[in-house]
Image 1: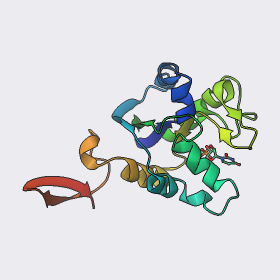
Image 2 (image 1 turned 120 degrees about the horizontal axis):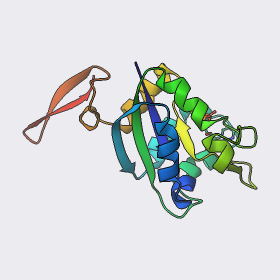
Image 3 (image 1 turned 180 degrees about the vertical axis):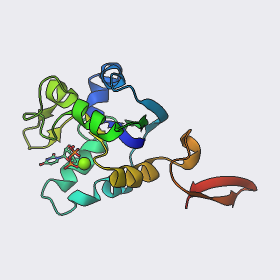
Length: 166
Ligand code: UDP
Ligand code: MG
C-alpha cells in the first residue's frame, strides 16, 4: 500500500475542474485519507518545488502554485492511499508537459503551456514513495490524515497534546 499527495492546482480551480478531476481519479479505486483547501505560502511553495530551485522557470512555477496567474491563492490538497497509488495516479495525470500528455489524461485534456513557457498542468501527483512522504509531511499534519502513515511524536501546545511528524 502506498500514499500519494495530489494537488488540484489554481488553473484547475479557476476552470471549475475539481469534480471532473476527482471522478477521473476515482477510477483508480484508491481511498482519500486526507483533504483540505490550502492557501499556499511562498515558503511552502519553495519547499514543495525545492528540486527545481536551479531551473530558470523556478519563480514562475512558485507564482503559479501560489495562484498569481489565476487571481486566487488556493489549491486543494489530497492524500490518496491504496495499492500502487503513485503509478496509478501518475498515469491518470499524464505527462508533465501537457502538449506531450496523452489527451485522455487530466493534463492532456486540460493543461496548456503559457506564453511565458510555464506548464499549467492542472494537478500535482507525487512521483515516488520517498517524495510522497516528504510532500505529505509538508502539506499535512498527522491529525489531518486518517491512517498512521509515518512515525509521529507528541508535543504539548496550549495544554493540549498534539501529534507532529517525528
Ligand atoms: N514545470 C514547468 N516547466 C518544466 C518543468 C516543470 O513549468 O519544464 C512545472 C510544471 O507545472 C510541473 C512542475 O513544474 O508540474 C513540477 O515539475 P516536475 O518536474 O516535478 O513535474 P511533475 O512531477 O509535476 O510531473
Ligand atoms: Mg514532480
